[in-house]
Amino acid sequence: MRKPRESSDRSRTLSGFLAIRTPFPRARSSNGLPDCLSTFRRLFGVTPDQAGRNLKSSVDQRQADGQLGFRERLVCFRGVMQQLWTRRIANLSFAPRIVPNMALETLSPSRAGDFKTCPQLFRFRAIDHLPEPTTVYQARGTTAHLALQRLYDLSADQRTPERLYDLFREAWSELRTNEEFTELFGSVEDERQWGLDSLALLANYLRIEDPAMVEPLARELDMLEAIDDEIVIRGILDRIDRLPDGRLIITDYKTGKAPPELYAMPAFFALKIYALLIRRRLGETPAEVRLIYLNGPTVYRIPIHASQLDAMERQLRALWKAINRAIEKNLFPPRPGRLCDYCSFRDRCPAWAPAEILAG
Image 1 (tube, rainbow, N blue to C red):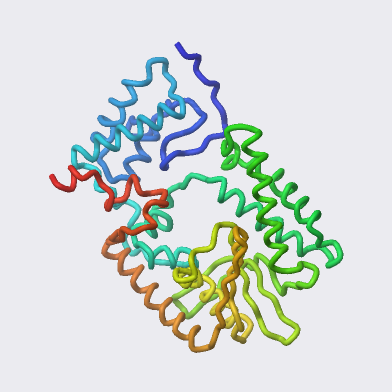
Image 2: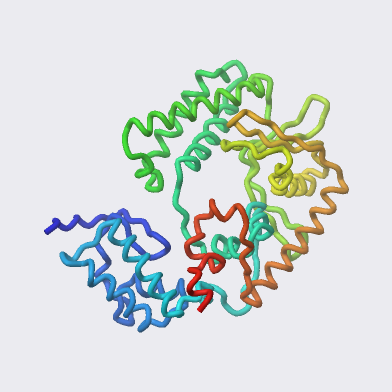
């Protein structure tokens, strides 16, 4: 019999209710069910008895020694989900998250892009706030952004390649202790190779521009701008520069690989929103927005005109109304497409329910 793991105050959740690295919850909620069942009910809109029967039966089958490890809990979760699908009691609409008179308070460029891409994706992220697994690519992006931000805290003569690499190492030394990053790598060698690959991407950045020649007007700029009395847009802008000729240039770093130029235009959607926010804050239209893809490297840029930002403002107003209408009607239809293969929520998306369920 496996020795039970010691309890720990540090815990995370899988899909909103499965504790990781802690014993299976023994605490009971007000209805007598384990706390995880109450969370399950809130997430999936299933009655306590239904959720309890399904989850408890799966737990009892696997909890011979009173404890469940990570893999066992994952198996338990998947088994329960399949049972719920089979019995046609899991509609995956997460209805309890929608409350009367609920409406948008703020909207970020990334969430606006989610709604345009797939309303169901927007719901998973912005309304249900479902967790997504952290990947090595996200860790690289977070660390690289922090290193580049700190690089421009230095004087121009200190912005050398070696200093940038050191800043990346220092940033990762800080971030790697965060709980979301502690189990990313299977071995020290895997982490070392990830670091070397990351430094190669930063070397690509130095092929694009000389940091000693750049003086950003702002970096990691926290923006919260009201379009009118109802619409409030929030977000963090990577960098904005004031060129010697007075023009404003907005820059966004990407550590992933650039899409083919034919498909690059949607990636500018968020940057156009930021350009609109800058116009409202500073009273002038940025001359250009650009995407720097370090994996390549590749730079995409487009000029910005006042008419484009006027159109973006109209689009934001329409999106705001559409999202509030979707909330009011509790209707967030999925839009299956090629990006579904990379979606963290595919296993729970109504568009990808088991074929036999849809057919039945």
